Length: 427
Length: 206
Image 1: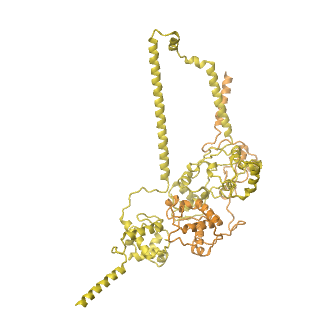
Image 2: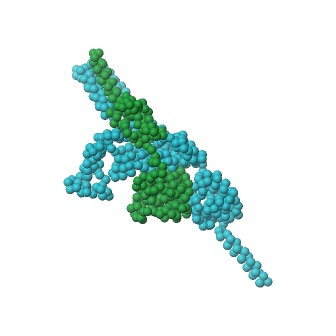
Image 3: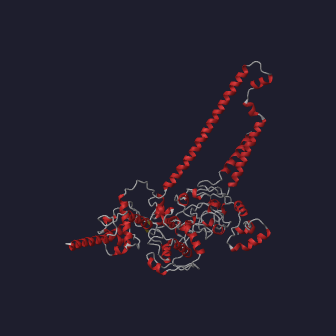
C-alpha cells in the first residue's frame, strides 16, 4: 500500500518535471509563444535594436508588417520563423514555397541574417504577438517631406498676420487721436472766438487762417521740393549704376524645383554631401543625378519633380532599372564670376574654414536659390582685409605667422600675406 | 519751358532705366562688358546652346553663331563636359574597384584597410561621416538620422547582424551600396572611404 502510493507520487513528480523541462517559460499560449511580460519586454528591446528599421508590426515598411505573422507562415510557426531569421537565404534556397513567394513579392530583397539565440527569437515573436493585439492609433502619415515645410510656412504667415494686425490697429488709433485733437482744437477756437474780452495778440492767434496755396507757392517750399526730388533721383541713379554688372539677387527659375530649404534646412543634409567638389576643387560642383538617386529611389518617387530626374536618367521606378536614353538636366547657373577673376572653393572652405553661408547667405531658408553676395571686387577685398587667416594646425602658415608676429601685434589677416595682390586673383 | 520739360523727363527716364538694370528673378541684370561674363572657351559649368545669343556684338562673324554661344557641337546634347574615356585610369588614381555589387562576401573577406589605427584617422573619419552618412545613419549609427526616418530600412550598426561585420564589408557597402543604400564611390575617394570605415567600426562597438 505504502509502496504503491509512493510510486504514484513519483510518477506524478516525473510528469511535472517533464512538463517544466519542455516549457521553460511559465506563462504561454497554446502555440508555444510566451506571454510573460519579462520575455515580451526583452523581445521589445531586441526588436527595436534590430528589426525596427525594416519591420513594423502594423505597417509594411521594407519588409512585411509582422502582425499575426505566426498564423500565416508554414506551421509549426516558431521553428520556421527561427530558421528564416537566422538565415533567410538558406530557407529560400531550400525551395520553401512561402519563403520563395515572399522573396519575389518584395523585389528579391533579402532579409539580413541575424545570429540570435532561439530564445531571443522567441522573445521577439512574443513581443510581436503582444503588439499585434494593440490596435494602432490613427496617425497622420508623413509622406516624406512636404508636411514639415508646409507647417513652417503656415507659422511664418501667422506671424506676419499678427504683425499686420498690430500695425493696422496702431494706425487706426493714431487717426482717431488726430480726429479727437482736431475736434478739441475746433471747439476751443469757437469758444475763444465767442469771447469778447481777448487781448489783441491772443485774438490774432485765434483768428488766423491757414492758406495752403500761398505756402505751396513760396520760394522755400518750391526749393525744398526740387532739392528733395533731385536728391532722391540722384540716389536712385547712383544705386542703379552700381547694379550694372552686379548680379546680386539673381534668382532664376530652375528646370527642377529643387528646394535647399527642404534638403539642407529641414533634413539637415550637409552641403558637402551633394556639392562634393567644395573641399577638393575650384568649383563646388552641381551634383550629378546619381547623388539624387541615393535617396530618391525610395523618397517621394511619385512627385512630379522627381519624375523629371527619372526622365533625365531614363530610370524606370517600376523595374528599378536604368535605360540608355539619358539627357542632361540643364540647371541655370546663378553665380557667374567673370573669366578674369580666379576663385577657388577648396582654398576658402577647406583651408580657410569658411562656412558656405558666409558667401551664399541663408541657403537653408531658400526654396529657390538667389545670389546673396554681390561678388564684386570690393566685396572680395573687404573680406580679405578683415578676415584672420585660419593658420591653426596648418604648418604651411607657421613661417608667415612668425614673421608677421615679429612685426605686428594684430592678428594676421589675408591682406597681410598678400591677399590684396592683383595677381592672386587676376592672372 | 518745353525744353526744360524734355530735359526733366529725360532725366527721370534715365534714372528709371538705370533702376531696371538690377538683377531680379530670371533677369541676370545688365552686364557691363558682357564679353567678360561669357567665356569663349568651353566652360564646365556654364553652357549656352542658343546660337542667337550675343549676335549683336559678334566679334567673329565667320563662326556663324552669336558671341556667347559656347556649346560643343561634337558632343551629345552640345555638352562641354565629357566623361573620362571608358576603361582608362587617371594618373595617380587608384585602380578601379574590381568587386561587383553582389561580391559582398568576397570583398568582406579579402579587403583590408590601408590605414593605421589612430585617433586622427578616426577623427577625420568622423568629420566625413558627419557630412556624408549622418543624415541617414544618425549621429551614432542607430539609423535615426532625419532622412533615415523617412527613407526607412536604415540598419543599426551595433545590431546583432552588423556589429561584427569586417572592415572590408563596410568598405564594399560604401563603395557599391547594399539593399536600398546607393553607391557612394562618386562622393568619397578610396582613402576617405577607409577613414569612414575606421569611424564606423567605433560605432559598431558602442
